[in-house]
Structures are given as C-alpha cells and as structure tokens.
Length: 236
Length: 115
Image (cartoon, rainbow over all chains, first blue to last red; front, side, top):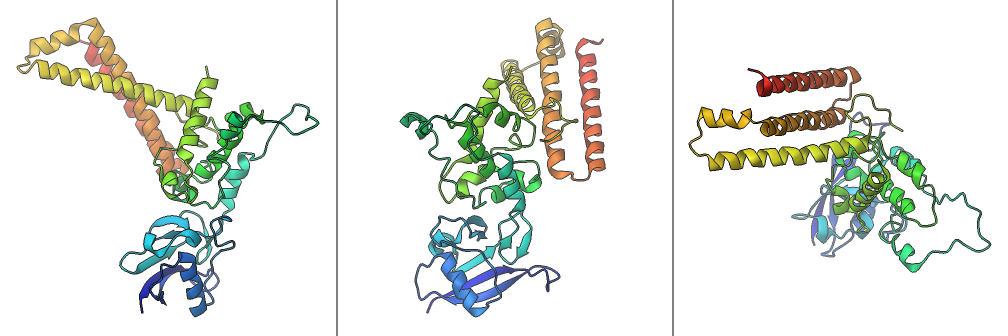
C-alpha cells in the first residue's frame, strides 16, 4: 500500500465562482506510474474531472500540464521524476485561459503559430518531380520539425505570459525558423519582415524555460538566436 | 504586425543592437574608471579634475552618458510594456522616464563642458 497524495486544480465555470484545489488519494501499489495513469485513476474516483489526452505516448501533445511546478506531458512523465514526498500537484498550463479543470484554451497559442505561416512557400515553377534537397540541407531541419505543439514551452515563458497577443512564443518561433532554414522555401524576406518589431521575436529575453521543459528535447532559444542572426545579416 | 511609436529605435532589431552596443561601451567605461581608481589610491581633486579636463576623457564620458541614456530607454521601455497594461499609465511612465533621461543627459553635458 503506497498512497500518493494528489492535489488537482478544479474549475468549472458553469458551477464554480472561483478555481480551487481538490485533494485525492491514489494507491499506486508501489509502481512508478506515468502521471497520466494517475489522472485516469483519479477519473475513476471522480468522473467530473476534465483533462485532454489522446495517444498516451508523447506524440500527440494533448496532455501538456503543470506538474509540481514544471510543464510537461503527463503521459511520458513518471512519478519518480516529479512527485516529491509522495505528493503531486497538477495544474493547467500557466498563462492560458482555463476552460475547465486541466483544459486550457489554446486559441492564442495557435494564433501565433498561424501568424508564422507554417507551410512551405515557393513562388518558382514547381518541378516535374519533388523539390530536391541535399542531405546537408535536410540536416538543417533536425531539431526543428519534431515539435508536436504541446505548448509546454510557450506557457512556461514569462515573455509569453505578459504579451501572448504580441510575442510569438518559443513554439511559433521554432516553426518560423524551421521554414526560414528550409532550402525549398523562398519567402525568407516576408518571414523576416514579420519578426522585426520589438515584440514578435525580440521579446525573447533568453530565459530558456522553453529549453528546460520541452518534452522532445528541442531548443527554441537557439532557433531564436539563428533568426536574430538572419535579421542582422539582412539589415544595413 | 505590431505598431511601435514609443520605443527608441522604432524596430526590435535596432533596439536589440543599441542595447548590446551601449552595454559594451558602459562595460568599458566602468572598467576604465575602476582601473583608474585602483592605480590612483591617493586620488586628489587636481588629478581627478585633470583627467576630465582632457578632450578624450570628455568624449569617452559623453559616449558613456549617451549609451546610458539609450540603454535606459530601451530597457525601461521593455519593462513598461511587460508590466503596465493600462495604456495611459504606460505612456505616463514612459514620458517620465524619457524626460528624466533627457534631463540627466543635458546635466551630464553641463558637468563635462561647463565651468
């Protein structure tokens, strides 16, 4: 018998006037469960608990949440990584509006992502076969394309908390660089022009929370630095 | 696209560059003053005044003052846009900061070249 004490953020805008923390006891039987397993066990106790989940193996990015103060994916975070003294505190991703319990409104996050036009743009005539890349050109996309848009990085970024409407955030900027670095994309100038103001990219203060929490081990701060270099070498 | 009217360089890129270049100037100036003080343990008024009577020191000092002014404008502008969400309060704060920077800069020029 090994009891885990879990404190979960609860808020139902239809019935609650304010959010509150609800305590649950979960018997893990000594196993090192993933946090998502614990949440499903809590859901058995109280079916009104709302959270997002889908693939349960760190691919879909649905169950990003704040576990004992650190953002991550519940499905690939073992209790041994986050629980302290058999206690676990689960909160929604910080900085985004809460729709219910652990479910947040990702609208602003997607809006910033959309603003980066995350698709290949090339106004030259399409060749009969696909646009080819050398292995070296393809290598430049490693560490960029793997992002699953779970929002763990952007919602751990203080610059995104203060200006989510103007600062693109680490996730969007990583994708901006993914297309700036792509040899097949030739919208470089318009992409850079979109990022030159004091907020969209330059509100990054190099705090690097994004690097610390990324469940895929990506480095948005480095991508932001690369875009800055491109802006600088493009300027007079 | 974000419209900017109160930041120093009118662009994030130029603000970023101004912030870094002015930081280097300020670091060099601070380093110079500290080293100078270390090499003159019994500094008297005549030596100190003689240092600032030389043209190169006045130019170096004015460069540091201007760097300080630019650095403070960019830095405090950033702080105000992070934390002051009410437009009127933010503009008021920015006006006070810019006014103070202007006063200190003119005062600094007067100290260097006046008397």
